[in-house]
Amino acid sequence: MDWESPLSWDAHTAVETIARLARHGKAEVPVYAIGADRRVATRPFDVDGSPLFVAEGIFAAEIVEECRRRGLLAGAYALRRPRGATFVRRLARDLAEQRKAPRVLIRRGVALLRAEPAVLRRQTGLGAEAARAGQVLRRVAALLAGHPRQP
Image (tube, rainbow, N blue to C red; front, side, top):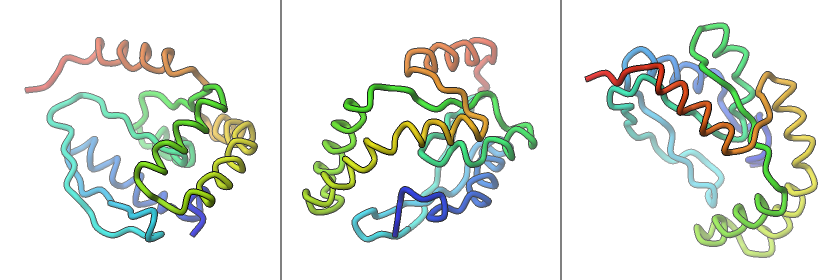
């Protein structure tokens, strides 16, 4: 399976899960085994009274428009960071988790490094705003400051 393709993802179910989290504060979320190339289980997820939650991932921009239409979206950001740093972080994570053979991970990582500018363009074209990590953290903090925590 090509985990870098939006076709590997169930966008409709993701939006429905986000809607459940927004309405009820809890939902079942998928557990994937990347090395096995499949979803292997679900697990309960609870936002524990938080007024906001962050949904992240390479395909998050795919559902920006629908989440915005449903009133579920406080912000949508595509991280803009140095490509070399992303390559090193991804490779370290994937090697530590033994997701695939090292040579596959390196080859895949180089391909993703080259594709990253196009991915960022696609994400911003889908409605996410390109921003550095610090900018995103400040915006999320401002959103939280405007929403008192629920008991």
